[in-house]
Image (cartoon, rainbow, N blue to C red; front, side, top):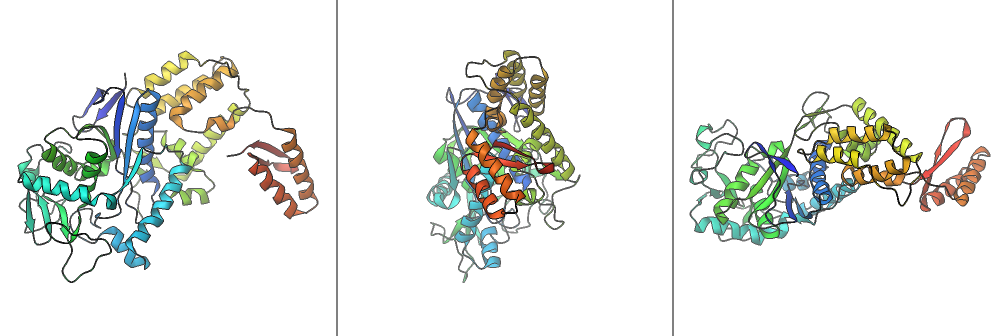
Length: 459
């Protein structure tokens, strides 16, 4: 039985879905005003891991990830400028152009990391009607009040506010972690709908019963979950930085609107540190996948690196640590390439059982990865090892199928030899042309010292 840790109850519990055989999952996705960094992608990897394990365990997964393209203010709270508007001003583009540009980059990263696509990516700007209706619902139930800059949720009317973080609203001093706003009734109250400033034209604003404006950042997630997945969902995923405020606010507005429990399992991934400290854009340590590639690493090397720590444990990124992960993964690939696949081979039940035991114990991937290495080093048949590692890769997502032992077609070998001859003669244009043709046929040529070469299945 799959067991997961719930951040709300602070307990590890057996996973029992709302609907038998179906798992509903939501993950807080990117705010698309800047390139996602490797810390963001650790959370995306966690969501992918949950998705893969649920599928592996036989569930039909309904998984939604939101795309924040409006309403996320620069302070992360209820003041400051919208991050999309801010970026649009800085880059001389419209807010939609900014969102579309960075969303395209995010999708490219997503594919490189071999993350399974959710059932649906949902953009905040496509759910304005649902967000307005959610505010109306809360207003009708007397959970809101109006200030000069918007419609706010009154947290004093939700007795469970603070349960997720463990910090009660009446224990928080205004200014300690929230902005000081003299119009707010309580320090923890938050904006549901922000009114556009007078005499100011925003890139993104909509008419509403309360005036022209835009939704608060917290509102979108609740509206999307209720619209796409239902009043109560199984799993909600995000980084640990969202647990204190953002997710608490989601719980408050959702449960006060529907009258039922919002989420059964809250899952929060721990921070990714860099060189032992906090990732910092100003210090140049807010690395992206582009930075990883420039250093000679692949996105799959980074995926393997994420597997070195449990998702609830802090993980320290260094280039040396990533190099170690790259080397370990390369070694696995080289071992697998030496095996020959057999279509009728069965998996090693002994190792699959140990692998599953680790996974089902709150997604203990480091231990599961150790089982992979134990299996590789065991005396089971090579064909069994292949079948077993391909089964395990349904969860690991390391593309082992591309590295399984295979025969190189004679035609490809001859092309590679011709390329090598052209290289020795200095005819580089023809050598490059053959390299491209080989790649188009699904293979690649790896040059080795001493003028030798090796042909491999393409990646």
